[in-house]
Image (cartoon, rainbow, N blue to C red; front, side, top):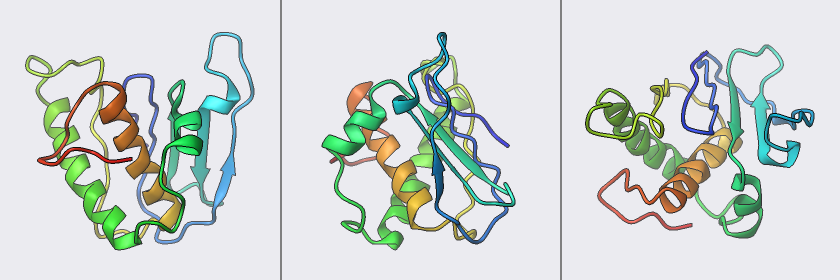
Amino acid sequence: MKKIAWSLLLIVALAACHFDKNITEKANKPDKPKSSDTIRIANDALEYEVIIIDPGFNGWLAGRAKPRGYYSETYLESRNQIYVNEWNSRAMQPQRYNPNLYEMQINYDPNIHYGYEVNYLIYNYFIYFQITYKQQLAGFVPRP
């Protein structure tokens, strides 16, 4: 499994082709973000897992993100691939980009079908990240 990001732990061990929509929240811990700031997605076999921990993301997702179904899965996959490529490029250049923002690379394989929910949450985290931390990961301005 791979970890990602500043205040974000995005673990994606990517080997699964199906998504079981098993979303749970982590338990509240004193030194960790509140459970409402944590989103976890996993399949039953735990072949891949996405955990997003970033204060404010869950609220942003509920209040500003486009609803599920607004974007097609193909659109989300293509944008995620663009964002992942740029993210990984920045993660490999800590002297040029803030290493606190781009701590680790993302292992996202465009040949694997992760399902709508995984792509939706990853896409929306990228949008949230760009708006919140004033970053631009692609040649276009992110839109919520």
